[in-house]
Image (cartoon, rainbow, N blue to C red; front, side, top):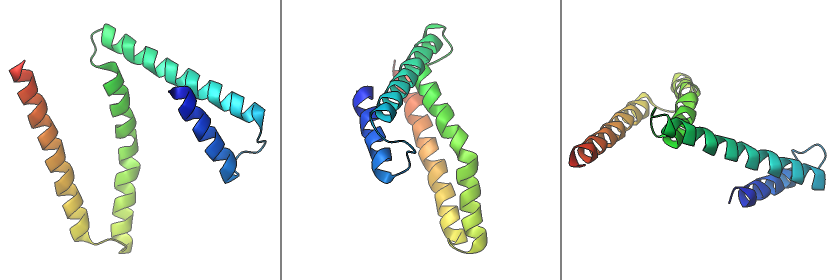
Length: 115
């Protein structure tokens, strides 16, 4: 699956013209690099799970999401400061984030108590 996705992503990059030297060498290198990176992340996730730290793959995904939060929050505040979006929309987004997070925590706690 990773091979098909990496091939598709490589073709898309070539078609957009962002590749300096398009061709077979780029496709091969990009596919091997992306598949190897995916295999490493899967192995790392399994190691985290086996060592009892937590659900490894979920923790890796969570780390990726959290690393993007500061720029997302900063971008939203910048849009609000320049007037491109209203303060009311920022407040609605904040309420929505808190509500979704609360719901996920509620469901997960209920699932843990059920088991």
